[in-house]
Image (cartoon, rainbow over all chains, first blue to last red; front, side):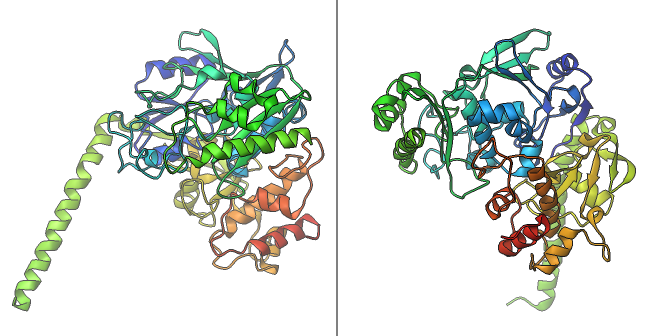
Length: 316
Length: 211
């Protein structure tokens, strides 16, 4: 790990300002992904701003009838919150399907959104990777790509967003709230938060330098049946090959977001319109632009079958 | 054919050359960290409680909580397995919650209360979970055991606090202690000897239920 200086932020505004004015600065909250990457020298911040003491760890009702989740609410606390379990079961389920008990006790809401891909070529510093070292090439496309993306990918990168929580938040149309270095706040719909790789896979989200996530806001409860289904190589403590987050209403309409197949949680409202016609129609539309590799083409079939299972569960 | 003397000389030369290579290879990274970062800014004072004892340390910022416990405080019960949050051997309790000590910086725990396996129980005064692991043969090599025990103690508290898991059927019903729940909730602790079934039995006994 490279050496770095460290400060405990005293206020939200001071944290954002320090991050913008200090070269090589990064925020640290749970640290469960960042420290892992720092040990491998994939992340090499020269200054860390510890935001754990900023009090952003509450879940509060909004005037619109939704919930505002503080950026530092731990995954365990979010999954266990009575209101989340009752009204946003999809989110609880997604969180509990991710990582381990130990990691969920540390990992935060904002950090989870910003976690980086688990593409093996991103982690292997002996291999070219456009995300880790822009312009060096992508070893994954012709390599071991079974776990990697099939849609939204580019010739520069086929890495996936690895998370579960963001898939649920995409289905729920959550909104990310931030504060900038100059004190201005903004609200970013989760649909617009993560970027597709294109020619610049090293840029993964729309946050600007120094911009700090302060909360994630959920809209008012939308009822329906909440389902999170995850297929992975072992029964627990593994990243998704494919995951499906669904909210299905009694009339057969609903929302579907899919994880494990793209650089961001993958959702297409046009595909959702096909849901009453069944899983095949919806998945065909959802993956119309897919360009899988030989090794991960199975994900196309898997998405359809998982959608089918989800719709059956919703009916049952 | 070379004489033994000539061979001896070439071996010595090889050793000298190897040492020189190591020195040269090591120099750039050392120089890099010294020129880019002011020396004074890379350490931080931190005070926290470990097993009930208040401690003050001045640590290199890079020191993980795991390394602080093992290398600075010589509490070697907490084990370093993968050092990447994948195996759970480093599990300790911080403010009552189980975490991976390898994936957190010691300086991030100012004012915190840390409990390691040494704090849970000692020879002659075992924690019930330690005694149950012995009783049920919940290990073979024992390397993952401190992490397993710290994790399982906190895990039972999580169930009592009604925190659900991936296998909890009804999210709105109280969490239950079942073998399936224990297995899912302990998935962050890997045992390469494969003592899992005995570990589940030990935890089940402490939880006060039969499998």
